[in-house]
Image 1 (cartoon, helix red, strand yellow):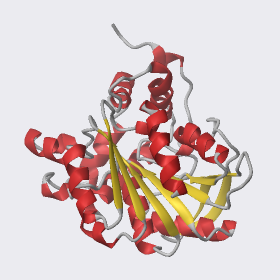
Image 2 (tube, rainbow, N blue to C red):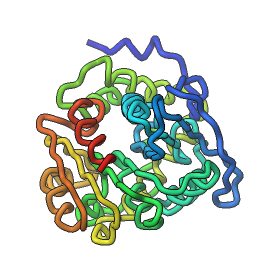
Image 3 (cartoon, rainbow, N blue to C red):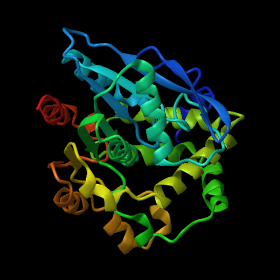
Length: 317
């Protein structure tokens, strides 16, 4: 049976101009590769008596910070200020043709915090943003009090099991990644127990973007950021992480970026989050490791109560 749902969807601009975020979005002017850009972000105040602490949320590759709605509500309800940027190349931020690096994303985030007058922060990075958050903590160790890595990519060096791919190959894949059924299956696969009310809205965003006349720019940015993940490992630097680290993963997460270019055996090794997180926790000086059973790649959506039950006490410690 064909999937008719996407035919009911309207196109989205590649900066998600028509998509409503859970809180007000502002923009910070920055420059990258001599290009003037504007980085989108949400700055959400506490809902109750402020505790004087700020949490920065780093989103994964397939999403913008809109998918952190429940985490934002929990944090602001506990007295935290929350800063949630869409990194350049994602969400409501532009999709420029630049040299993407985790160092650049970290520096842009530091510039945003300087703009907001924020010094010390706790940091949460999900998926690809586990690499961004790690680089941020390594570059600005005096600013990070707590580091949360939620099903982070970068638990392995993907170059050890995946052959290098040209930018032309990666772009060709992205520009043809437009079949609604394929996209919906991809997002659904992030969950062990996929509830439509959770995964379908996430998939709809990706489907609607493919309908944009500027989708080629989105695809180019996506290809370049896959190269960033592949070429810029952080795994060898875990022993230098200074803050307390909460490493939380789903027991049934097997996500591998560019895994379609790996052999089945290498894809299985590089996607074994349980084994990889156990090894990583041995190298991180101050690590607490939590594995959520029967859970996939996005614990904060699939098992929000368990995720928050680990997150909030850790941040308060």
